[in-house]
Amino acid sequence: MSVLNSTAARDIAHQLHPYTNAIRHEAIGPVVIERGEGVYVYDDQGRRYLEGLAGLWSVAVGFGEKRLVEAAKRQLEKLPYYHIFSHKSHMPSIALAEKLAEMTPGDLSHVFFTNSGSEANDTVVKLLWYYNNACGRPKKKKFLAREQAYHGITVASGSLTGLPNNHRDFDLPAIPVRHLTCPHYYRFGQEGETEAQFVDRLIGELEAVIAEEGAETIAAFIGEPLMSAGGVIPPPNQYWERVQAVCRCNDILIVADEVITGFGRLGTMFGSEHYNIQPDVLVLSKQINSSYQPLAAVVISDAIYKAVADNTGKIGTFGHGYTGSGHPVATAVALENIAIIEERHLVENAARMGRVLQSRLAALADHPLVGEVRGAGLIAGVELVADKSTKAKFDEPGRVGAYVFHRAHDHGLVVRAITDTIAFCPPLIITEDQIEELVSAFERTLEDTV
Ligand code: PLP
Image (cartoon, rainbow, N blue to C red; front, side):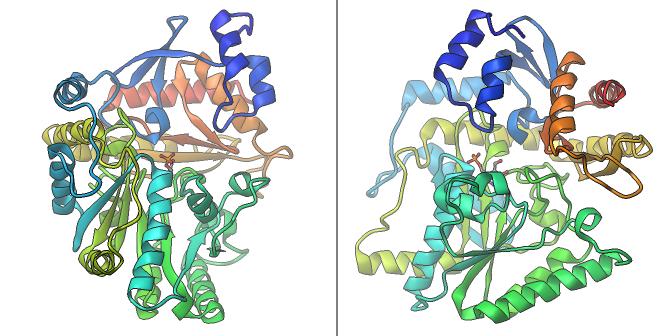
């Protein structure tokens, strides 16, 4: 990529890119993506890439889906924008809230819409603070999260996130949060410890932190059913069952952040079903409308809704909301997107193709650079290491991952590098042949990597 290319020069001149080393970007410039079709995207030089991460873990139905374009167009022509503040509403947000209440697990009954996953988790924090004040428990405000969790980047959601790059020099965490050990057995299991003993230790830590802080000061435990952006980390056996039991015993709510695992990613409609989680609050985004429009949703239990609603009666209003909350175009596209997921049986396809992807990647476990292959459904991570036998990381963390990320482009593949873990999360429409294409492109990339 030449930085003399004028599109690249214009990009460098005026954008500060998210999640990008700006100095390196000035040197190498962007890959400018121009269009997409199915599981593929095309750059402005006409090169085709298999999108192995579905954009940012989000384009469930693939790129260029005409039904979503038509749904957006119809809504733009009818009512391009309206808000849902102060007793106003519109059909797309009504119908989507109704659909989400119907399809989500347990007694989740009411939906609050935001524009992004970060805002949704920010809303969770404020909503549960408000809820506990409404319930006469003003001290119950702290959150439990995990190291390597990803919950977004606003001041509150960024505080819940447990990744150093999201805290460093941003002065986060800025809200009361305790980060517990990441439940990654391969990395954090101790010498001689079985997976079951590892879970015992994590549960012991959870109980100790609750005892130390006082259950009466802790509002909720927030977790991704399968940790994704922090390295694609499936929980060990029994982890979620036991976390929930401890939280229930201590009157601590469970927030399932399903921004990535929602809408079929793990081969079940929600990750909570996959891991037997009964959340009090469910956070959704991305695959809700395949990210064709910015949209996220916080789905809350009836009990939380009633306490919050009663308090608005006393105060006079619920003083929280975004101009884009329930945006008619974003919610109309979500309804069509969910209809496609259901009609085309994409959850079942994710389960079936997930088995193909996982077993095809598992076959790479013997490669000298591969430390661990992990995942569930259509999301997987391949952790690259300097020494397989000791699990030693590379001297300069992230260098090999970045190399693979860039090199994969030469083989027509887009992946994400999370330090030195290569993440795969293709559109749910992917076929067996396309999985073969994805894995062979990755194999060729690994051959180039020394
Ligand atoms: N929560 C989870 C689990 C995520 O993976 C993400 C984004 O990847 C977010 C929250 C933040 O969403 P957004 O980038 O839309 O703010």
